[in-house]
Length: 277
Image 1 (cartoon, helix red, strand yellow):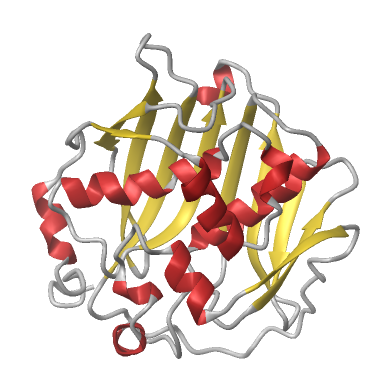
Image 2: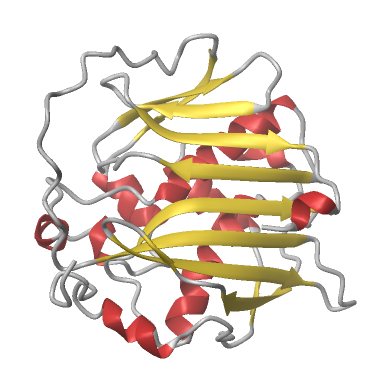
């Protein structure tokens, strides 16, 4: 791949000034009733299932806020993986400090991979929530895929062995409302999305995380968990998703209106060993 092909898209080359080990400005965050209700309205969640407990998936938005406070661009980044380690219940309106750091960068066929490690710390210095994120920083150009005969193998249906546990009917209004704090034009400007090769703005991947977390909480409100989600296919702002779970409640999937798998989440029991990313 030549140097021109490896140029990061748009202003994303600003991340060259944030090598591994870069710490972002620390700030305070909380999920109050109004913030939680706004995100739940966008993801078709009945908020009363959380009672007085904060939905920890909403704190994932603070990763983008931390990046912006560091003076780095959000426009054009694409979230590909998110992992949450929760070790204690967080109450609505409880203030936590957000401490984020850049991890080692990775290289993928479509761009660099930005890794971030985030701790959410209480005033007493305990950390009830940690996150690890992976974002794609796309290149301006991507090498053409190698030609070859298409595979005739039939892919398994992602719904096999699963049971429906919810749905998420997206609209431009819901996607824009959910992405309000992020400021990434790929979620709400059609022309910007088209410039990145998409037919329409993308729903923020975290919408699927929040929706699936709501399905998990609908079974039992967890206060200790290791939840990892991978975002496997673009979801546009007019998509209709169905949420699925395996019978044991350890594997969750989002499937779009065409029967395509868009995201997959694994819920594990949390141990000290698991907390290594």
